[in-house]
Image 1 (cartoon, rainbow, N blue to C red):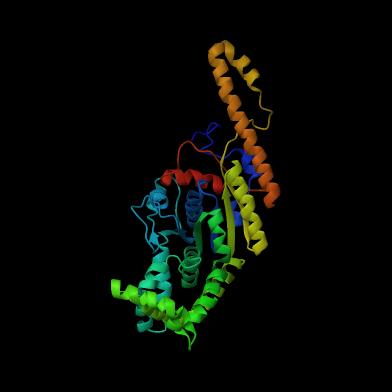
Image 2: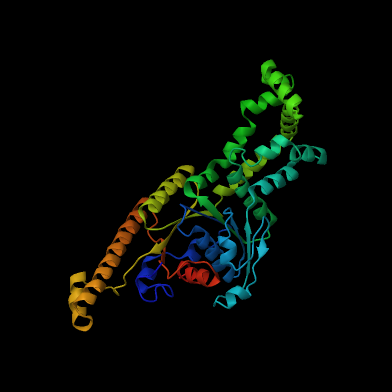
Length: 390
């Protein structure tokens, strides 16, 4: 990626600074920041830079990503991240010009492990815990229970928030269509546990054998003889053991729902000016509005801008005519053509930003320019941070 304005990767222009909002102001007093948006718009980078910026302001911050790729670890200069927060050495940022006066922690969510931990925490006794965790049905279904990945993400936030270890938690979510699952994951998970299928299995006079019917029981009996695996018994044990956790799941789902709508929580919609990500951002903003969730504002990455210092920019023909005496007609024409393409992209981005402002209601989005290269290390994060908190 290449910037269009000299020094754009190093400092925001005065015009951009005047037009853009301030994340420091937006995030003041917030304890949970959820970054949502379509894929490929710099959401993970923004989440890490936001967490770094808050830590540089004296906060104890943890950034959590669901992305199994190593982008967050690489950007923070770490070998790997796991399911528990790891403290990032502040010296990494000092060398790049940012002093971390608070603490910066980072982790990559393991949805399966988090769901296991939730079972361990809610199980009434060790026997129930071991019956569920060791059950073959649970082992197959635990990663696929309705809303499990999204629910476990906010459930992890819930636990980290309740631990009071951190002042601010920053969550990097999956692409926006999946991130919508965060909004209704508590209801969907509760619906699963209160659904007819589960109630049939838990019915005191039915249980699995009677509920499944004679024909299905015969099929399972044949499978047991062929494979040695008693699926009917596994199902019975699984659902009976799970029944003792229902109240705990309901309470946790309700707590997660309250946390998402709490005034201390805010959703930042991260996008770029390109058409599809912009449409996704508008779509997600509407869903937030419909769900009554707190919207903090837009972060628009990869903005192309030609800085005319407040003056009208010349057209390509005028540029060619001005450069021809010094560069020659052929080279001047090439430069003018490149300039014209950059001008077209900048105008497209400006029109997209205007529409994003109108559709989302955020009149002062935070703008981050297209930088000179991918952000893959601490230095890149520092450059993004400079624009986010300008």
